[in-house]
Amino acid sequence: MKPVLLIDFGSTYTKVTAVDVEGETLLGTASSYTTVETDINDGLRSALAELEKTCGALEFAETYACSSAAGGLRMVTSGLVPELTSEAAHLASLGAGAKVIRCYSFQLTEDDLEEIRRIAPDIFLLVGGTDGGNTECILHNAQMLATMEPAFPIVVAGNRTAARECQRILKDCTVFVCENVMPRFGALNIEPTQKQIREIFLKRIVQAKGLSHAAALLDDIMMPTPSAVLQAMNLLAQGCEGESGIGDLIAVDVGGATTDVYSIADGMPRQMNTVYKGLPEPYSKRTVEGDIGMRYSIRGIVEAAGIEAVARLSGLTAARAEELVDYLAAHTDVVPGDDPELEALDYALASLAIETAVTRHAGTIEETYTMMGQTFVQSGKNLTEVRQIIVTGGSLIHTKRTCEIASHALFDPAKPASLRPKEADIWVDRTYIIAAMGLLSSHYPQTALRILKKELEHHGYSK
Image (cartoon, rainbow, N blue to C red):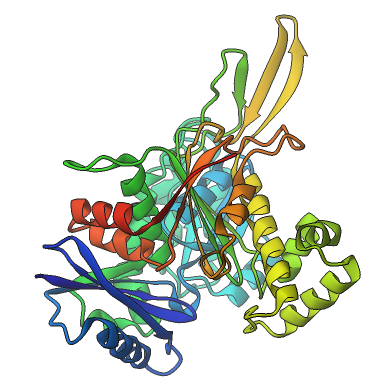
């Protein structure tokens, strides 16, 4: 047996997972409150004590970790046009596992600088202009940032004509220059920037967030937790040498404050009479709905879906549903337990959280007519042919109605413009191992994939 320890320092809980890489088996999982405000190792020790009760005393051959503690990797971006370079910066940041606090377009103002000072991001991503295109905006923004004397590092990934001039303007700042995230109109090049963001996270952010003592215990330095999840989803979808994947997929993690959605799929138009509009999206895409969550962002679900939808799915009156929503918003630590009303409400909220988040993540299609006849215009990803949905989050794993909730990610004939999956298998991560397997996959991809396929609870087609 060769035990390996995998740690996820979360914003609320520190989760530990033990695997035997020789036997390709999950040995056990445990969690404890994260203690980043005092000493993050206190929470880790508590989680390891719980793990020992399950697995017995283990001498770990290797230890790897990821983290979203202390707010995760907090980023601010600025670009030129909202639908183009600003969106490219946004996609690059999310794909690197960051939490994008603010995304600016066009020229930064003094008010913007005041807001950036208040945010105090971990990294600022400065983009703008295609190669050989507009340089005025990115140079202006570099000059504005230089007046701040920022403590945070700045990644410049815009028009290559202006990149080195931006670096000179920001000579008193910590600056990293990358290839343009959008070198040509409509072309994405986000991988180099994502790699640079992760390297900054490893070298600088770990220490800044008080995680350096924990990092000293590791065989490999940490990555942002969402980056580990995306890595696991890519592995599960595409497979690796010696082990096949399960194909294109969507993954949804419904949390207390946010709902994360991942898609591993091409997503381009399927029909000959469909044209694509807008910036092509990455094969591996992550979005974060910061206003959609089961407790801290419960109001966001109600605002997005309407209290009548909550009442209809829960079987409660609108007045009673509203009353319970107010209660949960004020008591974020409450779980349904054996309370049938709270169980019904959580079912409705989780269903609507998934429906809202996946609808925002997926593309749309609209019908139009040209001289050539009927034509369809697609924006965003076409996920109608995706046949696998992976779900996790407390509201889904602690209920018997998981598949019913997950089915709200599927296509709804009442909303034909949304390109959500038509039908899909449901896979449930009831033991929170996805991030751990993303970590493990950097060193043992076959083992990580086989454990995922074995441990994720698999259900047949939902329509």
